[in-house]
Amino acid sequence: MNFIIFLLIGALAGWLAGQLMKGRGFGLIVNIVVGVIGSFIGGLVFSALGLGPTNLLGTLIMATIGAVVLLFLLSLINKKA
Image (cartoon, rainbow, N blue to C red; front, side, top):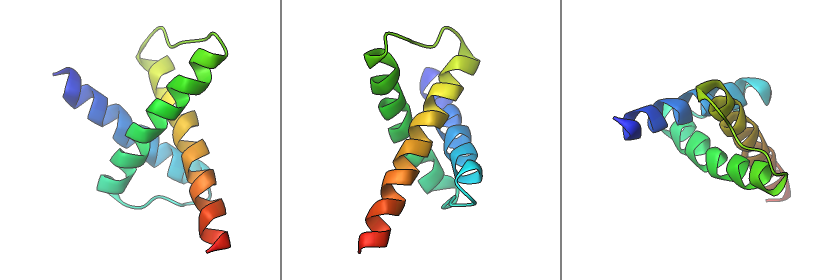
């Protein structure tokens, strides 16, 4: 059950990041991947700051911030290519 919740948070975080980054969403599957990778990035950033989520909303915010960072980095790579 935790894996399903993890995927749902990843999908929602990826979708939110796509909306925040001027519509750069890539569809459900890629949004899940972006959200999951974003949650790892967000976890690294927040743990480096000494912060961590305490509830489901905090986890979603952390994953969304990480996904936004990932989409931003991907957009920089696409501009150079």
